[in-house]
Length: 435
Image 1 (cartoon, rainbow, N blue to C red):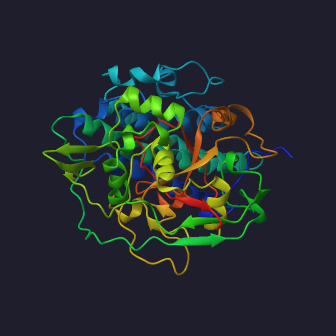
Image 2: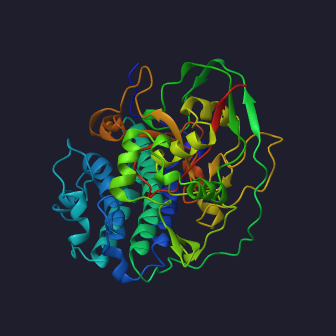
């Protein structure tokens, strides 16, 4: 059955028959969070784009307004006046069926619109969205609720991107500025790594239910797994440092062919944001440059680095099905954005009740290619471009990171990036075949 344009929020934040006031309250809360994330920025920070894969903060603010304008206000609000028609060209990200768009690598070259104009654009859209939600009724109500909730989860994705992109932009600056001071958090030694055994057989993964889910999480389907083992916690900086000191970046036998080519072409010698200063390792964080903490999870590694490290250990990366089987009965809890740390922290509890750090800290690379589940159907219309057209040449990551909103993540959530990408908060959990 083809999926229709209806769902309700993840974690049942808004029931299906939601009152308009509840929908609007959720909308305002998420939009306010986005703007609060920008409060530590100086006006000069809003237009910076230090590489093609990141976007200026100003663009994120405008794009998330455009999403609501394009997919809700224009089609559903009678008499809606577009704020500025040319913004559709500047702030469309990749929706070919909606229209053309400005080249992504050149977003940082635009001084206009100003930040003040972008803020007025957001306020214009917010006012119109309040009007739309207030007048929504059947038969459009279900579609409006779904698209509003989808738009909020889309904005939460961009909240995460705001932080990861700001970190890259600041790390590019020789002054290594801080986005904000680090909160007090006492580092602890990580718990010993244990190997947890899982029975294989015929299992089920994927989303089913009435809460919100992206189309790429569906349908729920059967998979066959061999018995496997999963590490109880994430790989630490200290453990990865041992790989570096054993010439891990100079041993071709540890690397996939494409990975070894990336190492040579990009001169990788350590994870992104690591700096060796006078024989000591330092790391760039959202709180600025500081000494490397060996107990924290290693972060900002590509799939190639994760795979090479696993090979060096005599282990492997988990499949996404193995990861989800281990996580599907676990509470969504961990070092997520609401913790306020905005940096991975050492695991602080044992594995007696199962694996730790499944949610938060770092997105965990799997060895699974990003491809459609059996029976996958994208959303109808232009929103079908949201996920499906990217199902080629990328790998799946699971679990969220220290900058992922807790209400946004779930055990079935499938993130995806190219294997050489490193600027997201990406890390490693090892897996192994059963003894």
